Image 1: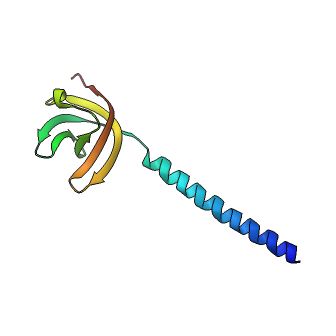
Image 2 (image 1 turned 180 degrees about the horizontal axis):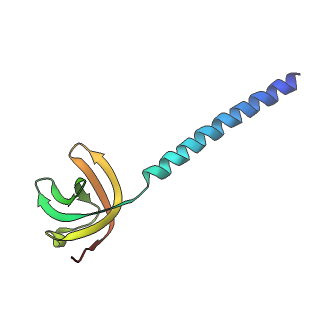
Image 3 (image 1 turned 90 degrees about the horizontal axis):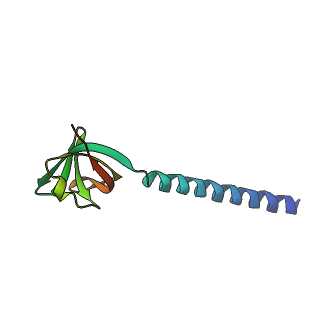
Length: 97
C-alpha cells in the first residue's frame, strides 16, 4: 500500500512537470513566430518606420534607409514597445507596383 502511494505521487509529479514543460515550449515557439507586413518605408522622429494598412512599425534589425519612399514587404518578429509596434526585420523585398 505504501508503494502504491509513492507510485501515485511520482506519477502526479511527472504529470505536473510534463504539463509545465509543454506550456513553456508552446509559448516560446509562439514568441518566435515571424510575420510579414507590407507598407511604405518613411523616416520619422522615431527613426525608420514601415507604414502599413494596420499601423506603423518601427524598423530594427536591417538598414532600410535606401528604401525610404518605397513599398516593401518585410518579414520579422513583431513586438510592442513604449514607442509603438516594432518589427525586427529578418528579410525584405521591394514591391513593384
